[in-house]
Length: 218
Image (cartoon, rainbow, N blue to C red; front, side, top):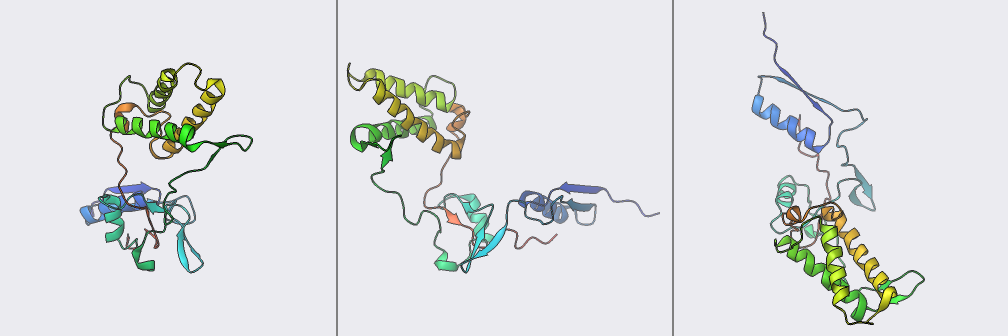
């Protein structure tokens, strides 16, 4: 009587599930059977490669954020997912960032960069760096910490230096920065301790120009 092999079922055919199944097959050899089940009509999950204007465009997973020192970039490079189109140059942030950002309030009024928008950006960046260096105090979440900093900044201003209208603009500017931070680190609900664990690898984002699924044979 032939002994039945243990069966392992991997639910889903996204990149993580396929990687898990690949590892199981490699480690288990002929000791057990591996099956991958997928409810959709294709594999790859969010990784969907499309051709556009002579280039491959990923409609889901799009880029490796940061290049220098990033283990994800190294994995993508070794898997041949970076490609050589355009000399391997990054597709994202090719235009960099402007030195002076134009900020416009409701109604079309331009917010002065030197006296209003700039100082709030400096306050935000300084507080975020302090949080990541473990120097933030007061406990709570990142958003709460940033709003405390703004209130302290406003309280330190000399009496009569702006009024309620200016404070409302400053609060809106800080909210803008918090919303941008939320896309990276969930600033609205992340605690200060966890914020210190976040790292943004330097250099521009490197776009994927070939499908990440290439090379997986299960």
